[in-house]
Image (tube, rainbow, N blue to C red; front, side):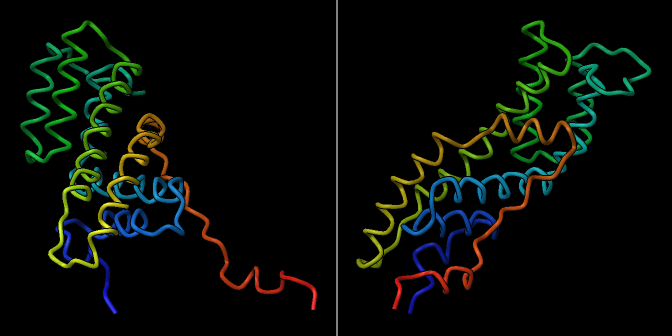
Length: 191
């Protein structure tokens, strides 16, 4: 028995769960997207994204407690970015924040737009890693082809904006409710 073609995938556990879900016909795309939401949130948390978002909220004027000193927004982003390690989310978020400021946008809607774009990049990076995974085993090739097709479906319906809303509200993602395996045992044909 094999662990499947994604056992050696160089991603963290939540993304491996997404890969496994996408490779199984029994898992719906919406269930895979729920796992993908958790993987994206975990990536953002692991890359100091939540504290970065709080700092940018103050700079954008979207925070309840705005910054005491008014800085040039672009230099403010540079100062904030210098405080964090150069992780993919930090670089992406700061790039999109600069773009929003350079286009004259400000406030909560501009921050949400920048965050949505950064989340989109994080989710696409995870999906791209799953898509590009290859295996030398012949019996796993059909599973990999099937999974690549489902990756495209999941990318199309994944709600980047919904995750941005939850992160800005500082809420956790809703827990996924898995079906009780024994609940359906009593239902069935009459004997």
